[in-house]
Length: 515
Image 1 (cartoon, rainbow, N blue to C red):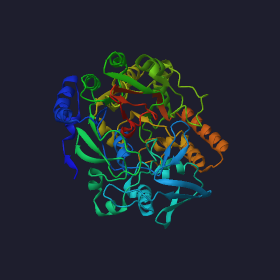
Image 2 (spheres, helix red, strand yellow):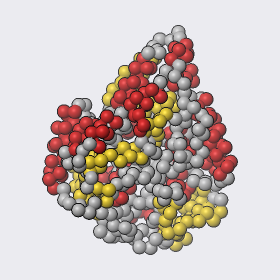
Image 3 (cartoon, one colour):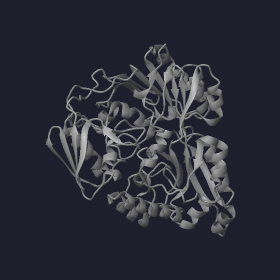
Image 4 (cartoon, rainbow, N blue to C red):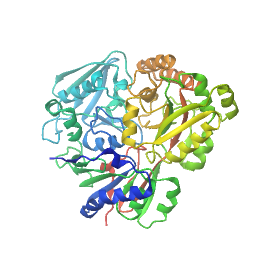
């Protein structure tokens, strides 16, 4: 039985190092003393929102979800090729028909067998508009799912969908199809499914102290390779200094998002090390075009040219950051490197805003969710204020902020990071296509090109369409700024961990060093 302790969400709001240290000591003292030799303790930079894979694409949620649930396919980290996982094979039988053959030896955590009915149920939950799934847009091409037998799944799409197979692997955030149990889902309420998730993965949830920690225990009936750690304890420490100190004191074994100033301190430690992956999250400054003031392109232009993003990112992130011209990772097949970031031109911004009263922007900011996010927000706000905006920022705990982003109430602009591990431009639809449940963008030209790109099976033609879409993003000022930050982890020297997919922290792949 899963132990769930409900805590008021306000307790997760850490406004100072002192408050962070106090909450950490309360939330972790018993866990630290109880941690066994095969327990790995991970400190994340933000808390959980949900553990229902149909209803969340939040990074911290997915870090836990991907240990509990699995996908039909997986990605080869070296080649990017799709490999079998819960499915032993897949075939594009027609341009609009994909067939997957399932493994016959997979059990859910309750001992029931995985069948085609579970796969069908999992996809239908996502494409049901009533569920408001953040994965819906990426799977909008699906017309119907047939199950000729218990181990065969046929997915018919409305139009050719070259990326359907990429939705069946766990890397990339939105658009993932994690397989859930139909019997469990139909016999339990959505809240029970969220609070007591039950999948086929290498770990099962055994405790969730909401707002503080999650404990996962190794699934002894797992069909695949058994991970090293018998137990994983995920704690949530948004305050950067507190998280680093917990690693250096040996209270945790892995931390996310090492602040740049603390890299050297960890590297000098006899007990910890820094590991990184340059292909981290693509941070995008999204502008709410659904209402004033950013429904006006001139205001969006003034915003974009007010920011000296290169200096901000260069001074704060150094070699661990790079400014981009479009909101996608440089490893994406269709990435157009010829599109340059917006030029810093505050004089142009002032001219565009001339004659207007200062534009008031009441915003919500994260602190610790992303590398140096607080400092980046502070620099951005100062530069906006200098040209005619009047920013009134309010710090928000990440769980509440991501929930507000999901229902389009997170303010006129905000930073959100996107994982492009699947290396395809269609990921942008999650946050730029107007029909996405989490999009605050509205541009008919982008929508038209995105739909065409989604349906084009010819790789060269797809690339051409997506390059046109990138030009629209740039010319129409659909985003305010873009940069990519490396994924930086602090890791105990008792462990071996090589991040392979940026922000996709994988407990099952962490190895314990032989003594």
